[in-house]
Amino acid sequence: MRAKDGAMQDVVTGLQETRAAIARAARDFGRRPEDVTLIAVSKTKPTEVILPALEAGQVDFGENYVQEAKAKWPDLRERFPHARLHMIGPLQSNKAKEAVALFDTIHSLDRESLAKELSREIARSGRAPRLIVQVNTGAEPQKGGVLPPDVDAFLTSCRVTYGLEIEGLMCIPPADEPPSPHFALLAKIAKRNGLPILSMGMSADYEAAIQLGATHVRVGSAIFGARDYGTT
Ligand SMILES: *Cc1c(COP(=O)(O)O)cnc(C)c1O
Image (cartoon, rainbow, N blue to C red):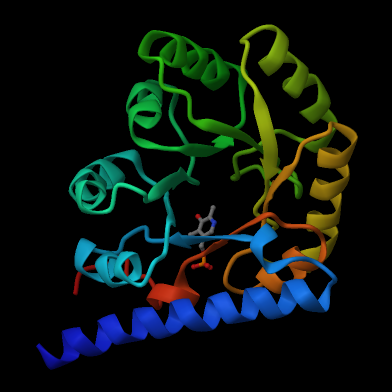
């Protein structure tokens, strides 16, 4: 029990330190702390680790896998109805139905086939998550996201062909490059398209993202500790 209590305490400490660092970075760069939303990325973390964050007042959470979110969140949301869930991982078109039912915001819209499925499911269910288009700023073949030269046309297609209102852009810069040029590029594309949301910045680089205009930072390990994908 002791170790577990310690782990929960660490989550609350990690959350408080991250919130403080976000507020500091916002002020340093002439922005208002309340204009930066912290999304606590709880992928791979069990509900007993997420609970203390909810109890400490954290509202926004990010998950990468539909199945995992479906297993963890319905119970948590019954207890914390104000919690908001963000889909930040790659989304298969055949999971669009579950994603629309489960998430408040989808950050990983990145292709026509997914736009089509989401549009169909939103019309059918009457439930409309906020939508953010993922941009592959580093043009990495293994990564999802619309290529930068294709973003404007994709946004038009989402609006005109599928009737989807897109509110912002998201990116994950290449791991081996300085992130700031990628954040600046995302901000530029968002600005010219009149999009207010910029979902960018993770544990290692959210301060730089805030400097360049991030409205949503997605922070996992700085709050919940390193992820363990293997067996324990
Ligand atoms: C896992 C993940 C994060 C959080 O990463 P950390 O480095 O743990 O902060 C943010 N965004 C996306 C898209 C992720 O997959």
